[in-house]
Length: 158
Image (cartoon, rainbow, N blue to C red; front, side):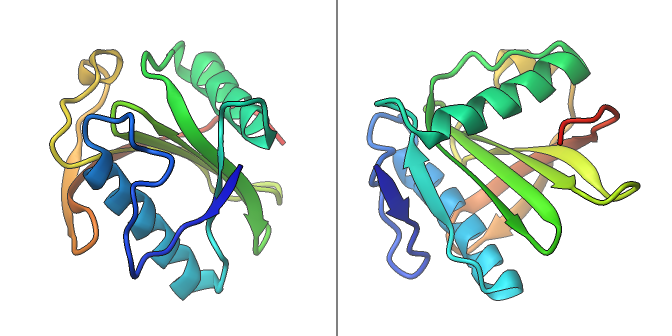
C-alpha cells in the first residue's frame, strides 16, 4: 500500500503502532516538505508489510548499515521509499521505534554518499546507536525536536 505524505495535514497513517506515532508522522512530513520545496518531488512511502517494493528499500538500507558499520537496527520497519532526484538516489526507512534512516547516494562517481539517522521527538536513542554516534538537535514546526547524525558511505552500493 502506498501513501502520499501530506505535510500540511500531518497524519499517522501507517505509523499507528509506533509509541511515538505523532512525532514520527511529523518527522515523515518534515521530509516530505523538504523534497517538495527543494525538488518539487511528491514524497510517497510504501508499507513494509505485506510484501511490497518497500522490502527492497529496507534490504538496501540494512545491507549498507551491516557492511559499512556492522550495524543492525533492532526496531521493526513500518514504511520505506526509494526514489531518484537530480542524480541522487534517496532511500528512507521509518521504524516503529520512531527512528528514520535515510541513504543519500549520488549516482555519479565522486558524489556525496551518506547514511543519516533521525530520532523522533520523545524517543530514546536506540541501544545500537547510543555508543557509536553523537546526535545534534534541530527544531521543526512539523516534528518538534529532531535529533540527527550521519556517516559517510565508503563502499559501492549502486
